Image (cartoon, rainbow, N blue to C red; front, side):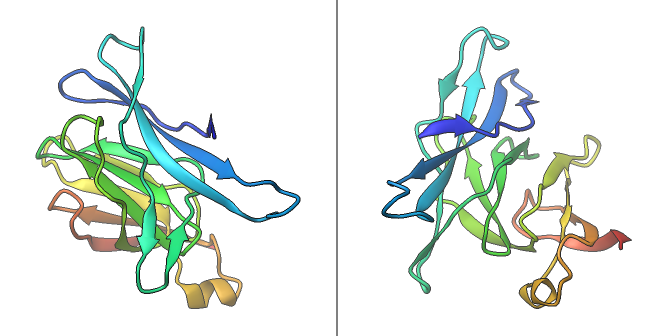
Length: 177
């Protein structure tokens, strides 16, 4: 696989630069035209970008009850949580946002899991309020039923997490077209 679609870089409180990334692995397109697996990793630098290392783990999500892997779409994003972990959000092709935590500054990542946020496969932005440590997520919220009815990326939403991304509340529609 080759790296593609790097997204927003952050700097942790300890000064480490973190750049989340997505890889696409594809089989022979003549035999398997739609068979690819997209994984996320992170690159990190402790010398202000002079040299970079890639995380030891690749992140993916597997739905055990469906027996399907969630393929990620481009542009993962990462935030440092109030308890010092890193939280990566990844858009998927399954109407859900996936997430993974790193407790060691992006070297190792937990198995990806789906969170409670429904999404339209569009970009996600997540950041932390400096005064409270709460997280803010802004994304295009949409359910599977809304997608089938043609309501796809028409609602820009926001939600807040007060527990480092474990749950979300204070949902708001910012704009709806």
